[in-house]
Image 1 (cartoon, rainbow, N blue to C red):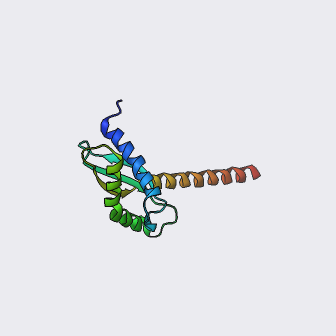
Image 2 (image 1 turned 135 degrees about the vertical axis):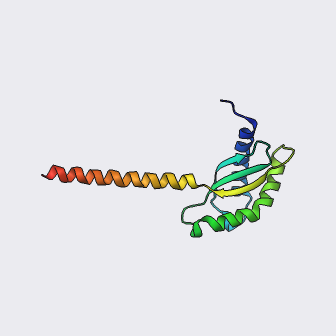
Length: 126
């Protein structure tokens, strides 16, 4: 499978946006945000940035998304300085649901393992 240009540009956008969020962003709402994945349209005009808010964020990340929406113009201008693209894509920030689903599934598997260990211990008592 080939590594296409949109995939290469998406990976570069992911690295640059993560770096901008860590080093340049001063908004407390977006502190500690991780960029999980960037999905870039084939024409390179729109980038969906899937983010993961830090643990313990109140409101389910809505404040984080609002902060990122307000900072998207600044982030885009910083991207323009760092990348050599004719057009910098419009940035759309979305919460990454896959990370939450995976952690939920891992918690369920841990519960099942604990319950099976308890059942084995009880059966050994008889």
